[in-house]
Image (tube, rainbow, N blue to C red; front, side, top):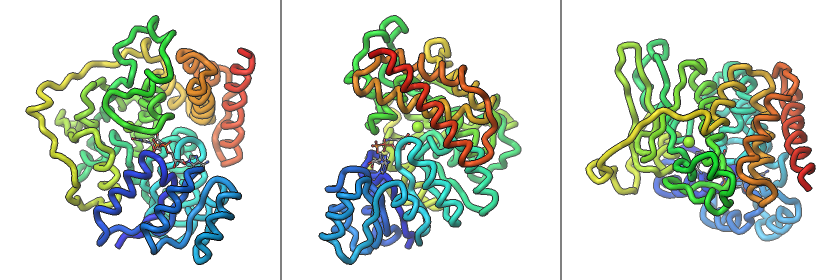
Length: 383
Ligand code: NAD
Ligand code: MG
């Protein structure tokens, strides 16, 4: 029985993780979880999984209320609650938090000698250097949940890293893949939130439309697999059926294919190195018919190019990029800025930030604060 701690349990990845756990009650058990403000999800999970001893919600008032309803459970709150769960007793942490909030629990889990199944790519975009160091020090593993990285991880099984020539990360292109730059000026939040292939949380759906998400995934691949940026390519693939590929020194290319359903990579992260049946329709390639591939246009999608630049320069720039993006992404969703201003803000932040090395969590907090304040300053000037 694998005992699972799940942070971000009420989100898109979180609820699909619960679904996977429920499909294999003989193998997986939820022992603790964290949610944000969706207290109803906390109530449902506490009823569904009697073995849960520990949970955390965002606000203290909600935690007090839940404590009264469940006097035999430990109910925590805030960032400290997430950290306490990450440091508690379980076999694997599924980090399905969104944004910078995910970094501290990832690090806390590794430093308290746990493996992490990682959906929260922002952990690696901001602090890949610090996380990689902690993994080596504690002899722990990060198992990817992101579909592209799960695909690469699957293609690497039974192969040798030193014989890898190139990682090929596929990209659907997001909601606006067929729009010109001129057309982007007037797109709406509702249009941006309508992803053609995947149903995901709001933040990552907008990140997919700007292709910041694909830039983040290049950085994520760099840290997860220890491959330099010049050996990581992005390939446009609008059908989202080939989830990513690995090219080897003998020119052999391995790919992993599947329907666009996150439950497969979530389940593989929990069952690896085993595979388990999954209750979903099998992939029908004859129905898919034709698969398309093309090179990305980095002028059309400048945030993809920016992520390569920030990643290659390293230091504080990943954290600055992430923080500015987090603020700009939210401001677009709140109708405060037009879509194309997300790019202007994130590019401005990375280009104007004074470069500093990233040696400690304090360096990371400073970089995050710098990017956050830069973006807020730009948005304040508009009003
Ligand atoms: P989501 O917005 O649907 O869910 C996020 C969860 O985190 C929610 O439960 C929310 O309550 C919780 N949360 C956020 N901030 C919190 C805080 N400060 N304290 C406590 N809880 C907090 O997001 P999602 O789409 O599930 O994405 C989660 C992560 O997985 C992101 O990093 C995303 O990039 C990555 N990811 C998602 C998908 C997908 O299909 N949704 C695919 C690949 C990777
Ligand atoms: Mg992905």
